[in-house]
Length: 91
Image (tube, rainbow, N blue to C red; front, side, top):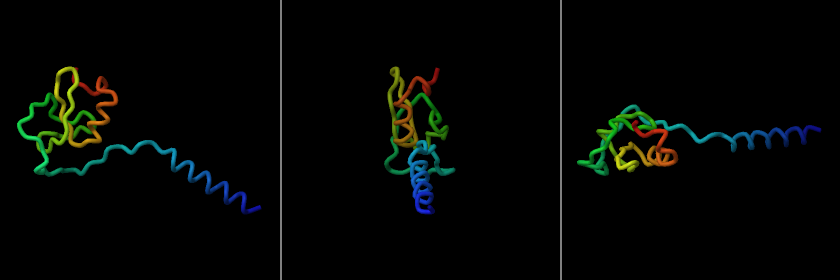
């Protein structure tokens, strides 16, 4: 009798762990700039539209939407923007 209960409990736990949402963006409280940062790029935003971090010191990725260049702190944030840019683009 215990075996089916244990088996169903383990199965339930594994199914629930697989059904979790995509993790939210969690960045360090401060990011240092690196040599990979882009220089002399004009973007229309001072903060990342996804995670709201300041992008000026560590701009790593950009995307163009409606002829405007948006800057992002990471590839993850850029990819999230590209999924629905109208949601995040400046009005």
